[in-house]
Length: 161
Image (tube, rainbow, N blue to C red; front, side, top):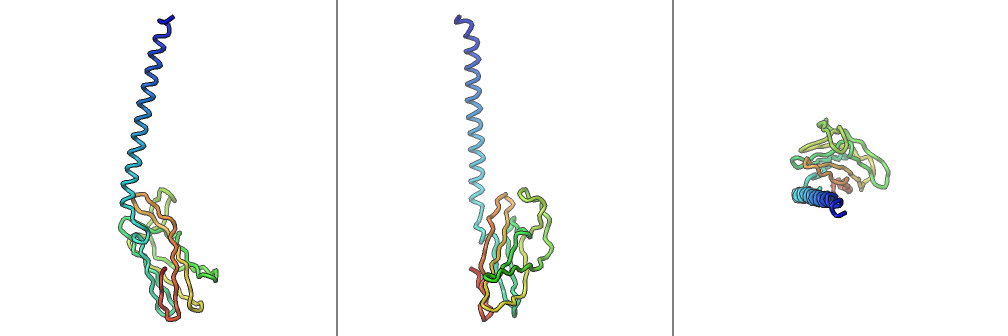
């Protein structure tokens, strides 16, 4: 009887050894992916450093200017402008962007380096504008939507907070 089970016992030992080696290999592979992600985390800058927004007033026209860090971009369709407490949305004209095949959203129009837009404020001052935008970097990290509040006082000074 012992001789009948011995080949099966050898087979079972081989299966357990194989499963053990595969488990260790999978754990090492997962650890390498985690290490790679953590190393990329060090390269990911805060959104305010990557997408710098400034605003200028000229009479009643507000001009928005984004300076975008190298290898990062903003999505055209993720911009929104709302005049707070009025519920009025503005849709300013943007220049032509570049078409990018985005792994998250498909074909998208994006802006690299720099983008500007503007619109006229017909509301009584002071006015507060909520500006929302979103972008990614080419490492593969996408930022959450960024929301900024722009206060235009009676002296036509624009303050971003």
